[in-house]
Image (cartoon, rainbow over all chains, first blue to last red; front, side, top):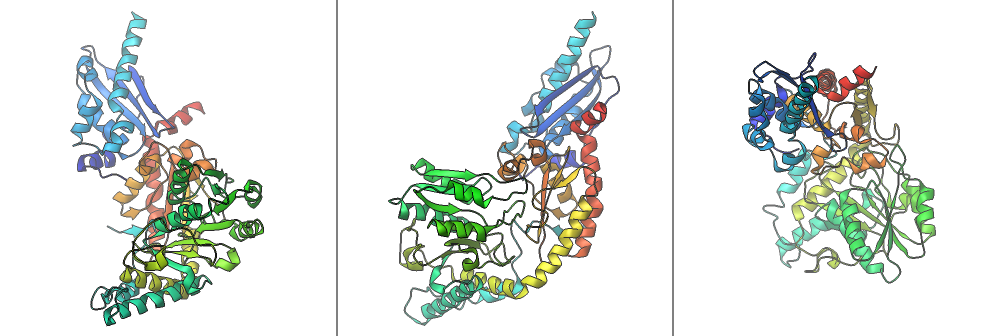
Length: 128
Length: 390
């Protein structure tokens, strides 16, 4: 096992915003079982296009859980445009870094969020 | 917080008697065994004595024991050295898909040098079928290398049967006995092996010391070059404290083995029974033909490293065959060779017991394990997916 920062351990041991959501406005899922990490993010979007609520579920290692958790914390209250700009690197930096081996495989939370926002936008355009 | 070490297949604590035996050979008995003076003679005597102890423990002759830096070096000398020594006879080697990387990567190196390697499959328990070995032998086969007991799932191979096949075909048989030696009976004549690797730190000895048994007439070519130590098969100044420590660890293992195994396997059975009461937890490896201290399970819907980390936060040290712990994107080659799905392999957990573990250790693990699994499953998108489909 790689060496994790205290922040990673904290988010792993006490994940923020973990769970599912009733009637989400958008859902994004990335990863696959072959590589061992799957992340799903649910969002609620208010009338000002801000993320009013967010939940995640993750199958994966400590880094996968921690990146999911801190991403939800970072973007809650952001506008969708702001949230779209969050990168995997921003997430890793917010955790005081990740072991190099984890940078690729377990650092997918920003992508899961972007997928959720895309899903929301597709739903809106389908309804308009 | 309570601290429970359940990773004895990775390494073991050094036995206090081993440490005591070693200390003198750092100082004042620090001589180089190649020196002619009394300091050198003391070191030489200690090495000779150690060689006898290690040889006796496996039914070998002292001049068939070569001290090395550990299991990896022993495996490398056995495989690469035999290939070099016998390449005029043939360039084909047989091994299995579940060997330790010290064997697999030595074979991979030989493949790059033009040797051919057959990787035998294993069944769902991790067992090699001796008739597969028989069928794989060709006129140009020079070596068979099959681990005695697997380091991940603890499955013990029918090595004596394989040994008889190898002997009948006059093909050398090497076994990596790093996990089995000192734990279960290992006799080179019963098993009919020609080369055998062992390591000190898996049997309450120090790290950085191991040995290779070489049957008379089966000598590999040296792959390191230097002085005349270990009859030129493994040159370099002898690690005298390590050699003394290894011998002491072997001696203790022989004396205490039955007592240790009774204790360890009782705790193991209790641990397995308790872990399997958690829904959708399955045992990997053979139910009976397994090392006394090995437990390997798959926990569905949960990833192994997050299990390790959660248990670590509770003071419990274990390991996993998850990709996250292997440093690559692929989960354990052993578990996938046994036919486990990627999900099952990613969700695997290895708990290996040792002589210092107590009943209270097991009770503690069984107390915290279900809560950890519940918490991680509640987090897992795979677990919910299933709920929804039902």
